[in-house]
Length: 180
Ligand SMILES: CC(C)(COP(=O)(O)OP(=O)(O)OC[C@H]1O[C@@H](n2cnc3c(N)ncnc32)[C@H](O)[C@@H]1OP(=O)(O)O)[C@@H](O)C(=O)NCCC(=O)NCCS
Image (cartoon, rainbow, N blue to C red; front, side, top):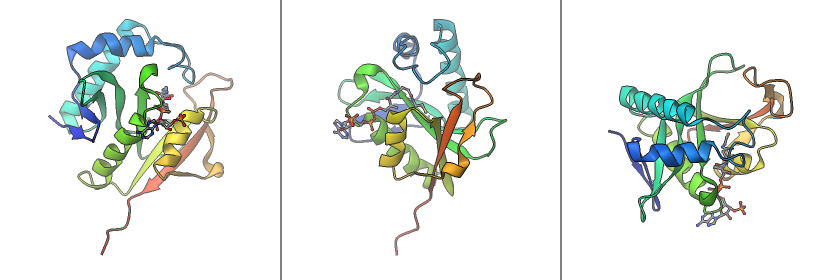
């Protein structure tokens, strides 16, 4: 079992009780504004099963996120290898929270723990983050994390149909130099 803790959050394995709020989150058009569409209950459940299988197999991936105080499931955060077919390879960080959990700094707080794990325990030299160019909230998280974008790396996501969601940006962060 792998678990990351922050001041206000726990990143943990998926539970059966997460499936209903996870499906509700993925059925919310506002949460899915920058994705090709909302997900069915079946698609949401299948994704949670895949995420847990990855966590079981390698000990890191897309963790379920809950608030430490209330134990309430609010979404996911974590890391995954960049999908095949992208114009680059590497490990990307990502986040997706239920609408009521936006605006509290939770995504950035979870992602800081994820990056600490990536550069620490996992020993990665660099972490990427990808999003549709117009996803200002996600890009703001990337900037708050200290990640930077080279416009020369902007690309069209081959998995997204022709249209406004296709243009994507890449943010990168190198492992900080060891102090001392
Ligand atoms: C992307 C997403 C996770 C960003 O969530 P977010 O809540 O905006 O991001 P943060 O956790 O960094 O929170 C920052 C906000 O919390 C506020 N905040 C409130 N209390 C805070 C605290 N204690 N500490 C830090 N920030 C706090 C900040 O002022 C900021 O507010 P602002 O949006 O008005 O500027 C969210 O919009 C989301 O899930 N979107 C749908 C899925 C998605 O697009 N995922 C990314 C795909 S690449």
